Image (cartoon, rainbow, N blue to C red; front, side, top):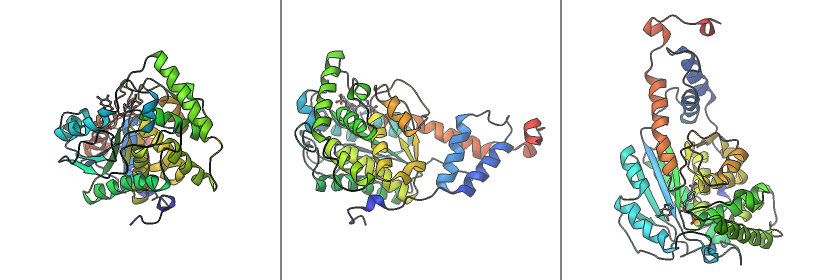
Length: 362
Ligand SMILES: O=C(O)c1ccc[n+]([C@@H]2O[C@H](COP(=O)([O-])O)[C@@H](O)[C@H]2O)c1
Ligand SMILES: Cc1cc2nc[nH]c2cc1C
């Protein structure tokens, strides 16, 4: 289906304004002062437009977690060893990882995708293998991905969206696992936003101040190496080249998933720092995806606030989380469900025989 190497440029779907307008009107008729459910009203109205129905629902949730290793881990930029990425695959499948617990609690489908880890655990039941390479290249020395690897990673994301749609998902949630991927995400965000590494690099899995200073220096070296290599072509091609040089397999898979979801008209809930940088890349590759991306939470990772500002995103939660794996997005799913339940289940003023206020009469 996505044989064309530039499939990600294709037009994204348009949210349905009529359903959104109907949902907005319904909110005004429900037995509450207008606007009194705050962001919950906004969520239901937005989902109405994305799902093309005045009464949206988030019963069937699909969660894809993409795992991959990063060559830049060799620079000593993480508080944890690279072996953890592969080890966590077994934990995702075994049900003990945070996202496995959350997916169970939500009754969501958990799709775990192994894109390549240094410590390859071999085939595991419950883990799909879409092996690109054991590891991306160290982007302090060369581009993180070859053009073929970037295509494969984008396609992995699109493939998960195809599966989500076949499953009848009403919401797509993407997550990631990859030791050193906060370095890749920060480097990519710096390149896309023209920001300095010191502004966007943070503790990741738990670096101290000395470790963060080293991480900043590593990203500065990488940006210097790749600065003059934006590549030929339009703004979208330049963004794709930045993703290829500074991203990683799981970051590109998330980017591909967001773009494929937007093209197919499937609502997306974006997770934390790394996922938001993938959303930034997706918007740079194809700005039409923007309406399809909802933002779940503000991670504690230092650069996340700046990335969210650049996306003009106002996430629902700020719980001091910094785990990744789609965990922050999963925690926000009950809020989406409750906003849909209120929207669809509350009585109108007419139905309940409740007098309206000035605002409704105006
Ligand atoms: O999602 C986030 O905001 C987030 C913030 C900090 C760390 N992480 C997770 O931690 C790992 C990367 O951290 P690091 O220090 O190895 O770059 C990776 O597996 C991410 O899922 C995730
Ligand atoms: C244990 C562990 C679990 C994770 N999940 C996502 N990133 C992670 C990083 C570590 C180190």
